[in-house]
Amino acid sequence: MPTMTEAERDRFLHEPGILMRIGSVCDDGRPLVTPIWFLFEEAAIWFTPRENSVWFANLRRDPRTCLAIDEQDLPYRKVLVEGRAELVHDIGLDDVWRDRYRRIACRYVPEDAAEDYIQATIDQPRGLYRLPLHAATVRTWRMPGDDEDQSGIWHQRYYRPGTRLKR
Image (cartoon, rainbow, N blue to C red; front, side, top):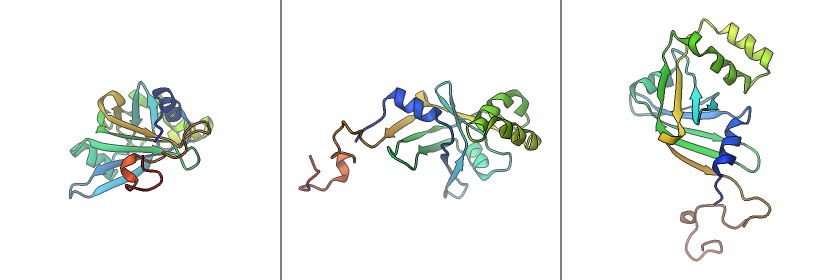
């Protein structure tokens, strides 16, 4: 099962347009998964819940989270992160980190459209969270390249004993 090097992982996390799915725990114990925009800077994943989003309330109560960042096309790269989200700026402090929010928006829409979006939603408070990778469990995966062994794309625990691909 090929994993990404740290450099490959970081390049992937910098690619524009890839959504992140964040998992949080609701107050009744149900899981909630929400697709959101993110930014990878300073060896951390940064993200911004709106003031009244359910997952913001969930993270306030229980900061344990999991993140799934993946792509739909080959080589099917994915980064899975488990850890505790850190609230860096609470609601009402949006002006302090507006430039970071601008960089998040620019990953998903052209710069002029990102600025229009920011100005249209400037009166809707958000929080700013981060999850530093050094303080989290991080796993990566990708399909093997043309010059790599194609037979071991799954972890060995998935292959049944005695089957062709079991090593």
